Amino acid sequence: MANIRVLLVDDHDLIRYGLRRLLEDQSGIEVVDEANSGEQAMEKARSLRPDVILMDINMPGIGGFEATSRLTRTLPECKIIVLTVHSEGPLPKRILEAGAVGYLTKGCPVEEMVQAIQKVNAGQRYIAPTIAQQLALSMLPGEESIIDVLSQRELQVLIMISRGMRTNAISEKLNLSPKTVSTYRKRLHDKLNVSNDVEMMHLAIKHGLLEEEESKPQL
Image: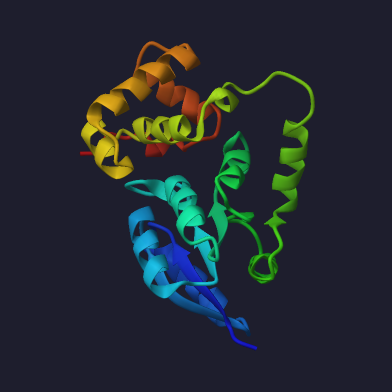
């Protein structure tokens, strides 16, 4: 039986190195390459056609959320497992809606990671038990998260603005005009009932869309 070919995507060199070392010790799994951004992940996925992509979410540029959405549309045969620090908030639900078939936290044991890779390669889903429990609870009747009212594109723009990206940079990464990005910004302010980007950033942190240290201006 052929090895399961895996592409590692994370903007931290040490994390990619650690993942490669762990997975290369596993029988039946081959790490074909690494990527440090959503853009590079898309480029390498198109050329290498891996079976499984281990995808971080919070990275420079378009990030893992947008990369997952694009790759599941253009390369549906590549199965994406999100591997992230985020285990709470609306992100797990939205990233699965974007097309990921697996969701793991970075604290998971290597045995669970291998199991997830094997299952998604076989056409199944794998959601870490803690994430699955949270998803089940989120479906119970109750107050809807304000993030749930946003479209996928609005959520992506929210994350990028909250990470300090400028309008022109967002425009370039998402193939939108600067005017359209500004329209999204105003719509987000209205929907989230905030008056500026700083308030919106604090809201993103509160709802688990990014860590506080990520909310720094980018050139």
